[in-house]
Each structure stands twice: as structure tokens, then as C-alpha cells.
Picture 1 (cartoon, rainbow, N blue to C red):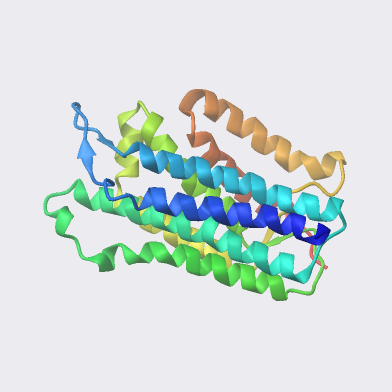
Picture 2 (tube, rainbow, N blue to C red; picture 1 turned 30 degrees about the horizontal axis):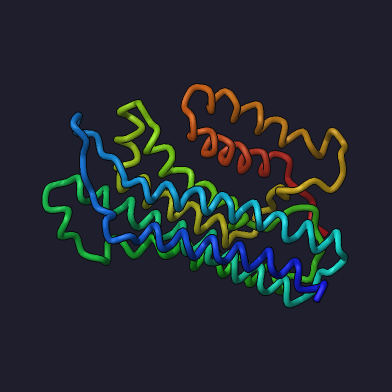
Amino acid sequence: MKQQIPNCFTLINLFLGATAIIYILQPGLAYHADGDGLVTIPEKMMVASWLIFAAALVDFLDGFVARWMNQCSEMGKQLDSLADVVSFGVAPGLMVLQFLRFSYASTEGGLDISMAFLLPALLIPCAGAFRLARFNLDQSKSTGFKGIPIPAAGILIASFPLVNWYATDAWVLDLLLSKWLWYSLIVLLSLGMVSTVPMLALKFSGLSFKKILPFLIILAIALPVAFLFGWLAISAGFIAYVILSLLFKPTES
């Protein structure tokens, strides 16, 4: 029974991700504009963002609990990947699909757009699933990740409904209505996840200054952006994470 405790955390992760999908696909989700003509999104999409953030926290805790209780298992590893595909792949992918809908709906005749223009958003869960499968089969030991971790990609996407909801600058709202932004994000995140480019591990394996320096830099970048632009700090932190991973080049064995 003790070995199932970490798996319970993983199932909570899955439950939160599945619930986020329900909120993303609520029937009331549709394009509308406020009195100033600025596009907004329903509050239910924001609930989905918080659920994905909560899933990320639980995803961290299940690994921590498994190591603390010395209950790491092959079943737990596979279950964790299945939960991550839902919470950080399918749910964020559907978020991107909805943002594409909003983007097209803001143009003349956009409400009748073919589903073919929206389906590229599903490349995100496909790329995430590929990355997790490769990770599960990888027998090498490394101090970093290979490719962008799917939780990082999921958290980045989950931040955009909050950016949209709280933004006061018209340029931010206009940017989030650009279909080219979303298509570019789909391509970059999908390629980033399936790539084998060494990335910094989102965990500490020691407290040496050299190991925590990249994270201190990310924090130094994200905090001023948070003060000036709110939730765009997550995007700034993500970009800094990718750049620092390329600069610090985590070693692989």
C-alpha cells in the first residue's frame, strides 16, 4: 500500500489535467469583444490555467514523495508520463486550439473557418508524448533534460489565458489574437520537445553556486517583467530558460 502513495499524487495530476480540459471545452467558450473592441476570453479558460498550474505542483510533489519514501517504481514512471501527456500536452494543446479559434473569429468570416486550420494545435500533445516515450526508454544518466520538458511547455501555454485576462496594453491583446503567434508557438514548442538539445533540469541536484546560477538569472529576469507586465513573466522566464540552457550546455553521460 505504501508504494501506491506517490501514484495517488500522480493520479491527482491526471485528474486536474482532465478537469482543465473540461473547462477549456465548455460550450460557452466563444469569441466576444468588450465595449472597447478588445477581445477577451471567458473566465473558465482562466480556471483551466490554474488547474494546470496545480497539476505542475502535484507533478513535482509525486517525484519528491517517491524519492523521500524510496518508492520509485517502473509503474510510477509510466503513470507519471501518462498523466503529463494529459495535463501538459492535451490540455495546453486545446488551449492553443481555442486561441486559434479566437484569432480567426476576430476576422471577417472567421467563424466559419475549417477545422483543418485549428488541428495543428494537436501537434503539441503529440510532440509531448513522443518526448516522454523517449525519456522512458532512455537508459543514460544525465544532469539535464533532452529537449524542452513537457511541463515547462504546458505551463508556458497555460499562462496565456491569464496574460489575456489581466492585460491592459492593447499590443498584448493584439499579439494574442495573431494566428501567426500561435502557429509559431506550435512549431517551436513541438520541435523543442522532440529535439535532443540538452536543457537544464528543472530541479536542484546540489546547492553549488554554479548549479543555481541559471535559476537566479531566470528569477532576476522574470521579477521585473512580472512587475511591469504581470503574467508575461512566465514567457520571459521560459525564454531565459531556453537561452541559458544553450549557454550553460548541461553535460550528459
